[in-house]
Image 1: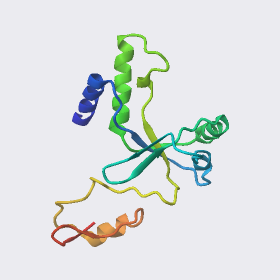
Image 2 (image 1 turned 90 degrees about the vertical axis):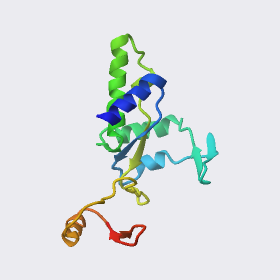
Image 3 (image 1 turned 120 degrees about the vertical axis):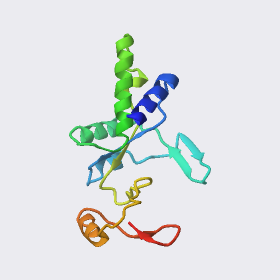
Image 4 (image 1 turned 90 degrees about the horizontal axis):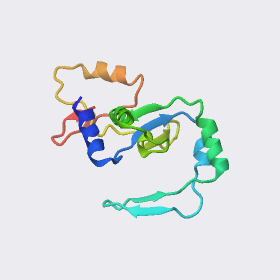
Length: 165
């Protein structure tokens, strides 16, 4: 597909990993979150153009890392966003391996990934570009009844005031 081809060409050209994969895992007791709870001052801190402060902590405590490894060992993780990026990273790694020896610790053997606890009560995933539009003659009442069995939905108004999903 075109998105995968574009991403693969970007990797070939830059040899840089620009985008994360968004993964979800289930940890209802919050054990992983507790182990990764930051302590002290962040290693890095930056404010973006919108005034949002980003902070990064390095987790180096062997005991905490052991807890995370143990708790994640049997988890099923879901790619919430980034399946094209994941497949492209695998394809690039395989390409590079075919050209010669790739060290075990080479950056291309790893993919930048954000792991998020799906049971975190503060988790909100917004459909930033997956909105329904241009659908005519649909029975919206029936659609909402079906959707509401699995999802929380609410109508929103577009720029001209019509109600949409």
